[in-house]
Length: 333
Image (cartoon, rainbow, N blue to C red; front, top):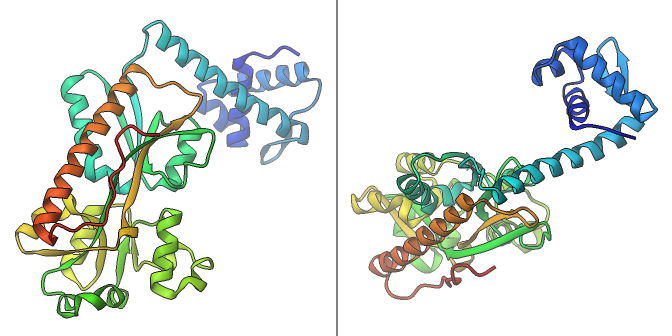
């Protein structure tokens, strides 16, 4: 059987939209042209791939098998074109980045700013979300790389991980919060009596520890993240605004609240060591980065290292010299 990418693209569009008119519009064809392409594809395949109904089109059993392979072929064709662009120097200067909720405002913003200063003609698109939503986009090749908490991705052989430094989380609350009058030895246990604000999806290791702290180890495996937080959001700015106005407690990195701490608006209490996060740069293991991507990785590593040095100095100033976090050498994988 002989198939070309044009016909495969038509079949995938029809499978996605389940309607000839919508599918034709999505790939900028007329409806009759799409119908002819599907008919030609079915003739080459020797079997019907779609059942036509009054509501549209549905893949047949044979069609589902065909579509699964078609998706793989189209992904590999995209990779081939991209790899040849890299080899022949035709890279277009575009970078698609996934940014986890916390690293977005910890060091990634500075790395992107540095990239734009040195390469102002490039185009960068950033998708901000939590790690659980970014990994599927990376696998679909909608992203070139992502900066996320990496413990959920390290065991996946299809994902290449470049580890960054570990960063400590802090419990942040308004000045004058009732927790500040509690004996420090009991403060963590008392924290869970107040609304808790964090990202909507925790890394597995952090979720296990947090569930155990709130409800005991026996309940940790039965719960989802929604059971542990009162407000789940992907905006660190929103978290800060909420804790300023009520008795909620947020899990935030130190650099995000440094200004409010200096002005006396917020107070940060160092969390236990398990509230730290192991961030990293992830990409598909078999997919090469462009020269622009490699340059950006180095800039992320530099910004991450600078943040770690700042955190160490600032934590000593605020909390004393003893800290429980352990730094991971930049660039280890």
